[in-house]
Image (cartoon, rainbow, N blue to C red; front, side, top):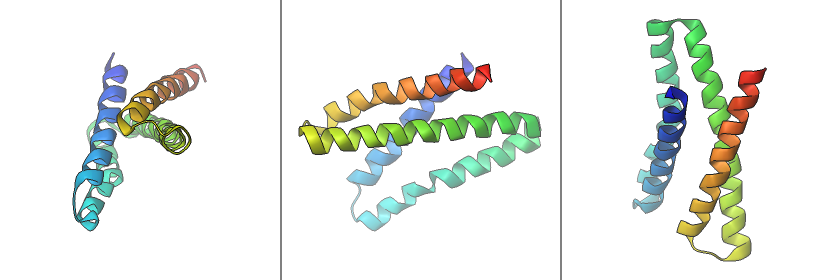
Length: 113
């Protein structure tokens, strides 16, 4: 259940960063929200100190799988927006389903390996 919460919260945080980055003006200020990867690295550092290298390795694997799922989400959103002309809310909502499928599918595959 903890992994489900992490996946959902992680997806929400990434979406929130993207939304804030798109809404804020000037666009150069929005670049601050690109710092999320450095937050991930800091989190891994804390995980190593607190729980050990094995735990941090599991966390980093989850981060990589989440990044792959985010890439799939981003591609689907771009394609929906460019090819279908539907609104951003509908495109992101549909792509969120793709993100969930990819994220949990990869987690299941990685767990089976």
